[in-house]
Structure formats: structure tokens, C-alpha cells
Image (tube, rainbow, N blue to C red; front, top):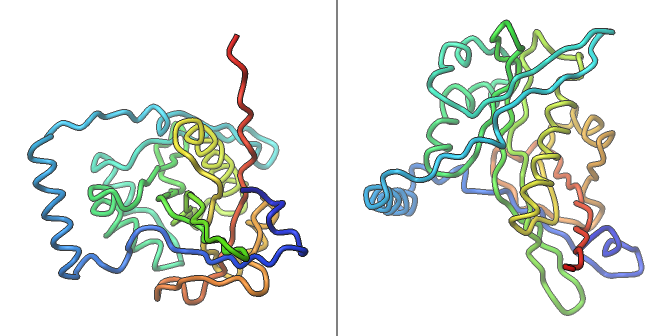
Length: 238
């Protein structure tokens, strides 16, 4: 699956499907699933912990000087920095401060924190999850495996320094690495209208006319977008 399928000569229909089940936390079905998860965890209390893809640093050019970010997995160790994080966009702020830990525990999202190196100041976070993009042709329906950027937010005091672009580029690079182990064809996200141009500059496309999205209430004001990952070359074994 790649950009060629969107040729106007083909009668394709796309449907963006929000990843995970953001609004089912209090439902009976969710309670049943979470109870099942707790049983599995009790049988396997020590799952492997490998955070190598989620720990490191990024150097970006900002205002003619090097600006270095350190990124780390979500942890209660950074609770103070999380509570000091400031964003005028309340839903993302509430997600980080109230929901991110629960969602991480049940496997609904994976959140990476980005700090200003040296100052240990939390300047941004990015949450990802598994998702899919449904593409319907004349005779077949394909659910294309995707990774959804569920949340990307920069502290208001650190905006317009290129940090958001650096974090998104870093996230895409990490998804390229994942693609070597798990099939992934697209990156999807639901952008606020004022952020759509930002994502377009980085290669994301809006769902075109005739394309659909399965909305939840948190996405009603958002613009669904996608990024088609390149093919993976298969090398011959000699």
C-alpha cells in the first residue's frame, strides 16, 4: 500500500479510524477487558522492560544556537515536571496530567516525555498508539496497519522554537525502526484546524473529498491526516 493507490483513476474510499478506545474506560466492556488484563499480569508479573527506543537526546537548531532535548519514557519519577507543564489547550494538558499513566498501564497509548537538557524542564510530550486506515476499492476492503500520533503538545513557554517539528520527526524515525519488526503502512493523526498546516509541511495529507472518518467526540473538531510510509527494501541473502 502506498501513494499510488490514491491515483484519481482508481475508485478508492478511505476511512480514518481512531486508534484505541479512548472513551470506553468506564464501560462494562472495558471493565471486563481490564479485569482480564489484571489476571494476565498476575500470571506474568514481570514483562520485559526495554526502553532503548524511548531514551536518548535530540539536538535542534533554535535561534542560532544548539538546543538539546532529552527524551524519556513516561514515569511517576517526573510527576512534578508534569504538573508544572503548561498548555493553553486544556484537553491535551488534562490527558498528560490525568489520563496518560492509566492509558500507558493498560496499553492504550505510549507517551514519551521531552526535557530541556540540563534544566530538566519538561518542554513537550508525544503519545502514540496502534491504529488503522480503512481503504475500500472496487472489490476489496483493506485495513492498513498504522501508528497514530494520538497527542503532541509543547509547553506554551517553548513554542515557536522548532521543538514540535523535532519531536514529530523523531517520532517518525522511531516508527521507521518499528517497521522493521511490525508491519506499518501509515502514520495517522487528528489535527486541530490551526495545526493542519504544520503537519502538511512535514508531509502529512488531509483525507481528500469522499474520504471518511469514524469520529469519537474528542475528534469532532479535528482534521484527520495521514502520512504514507515508504516501502521497505528486501535485501537478498548471500
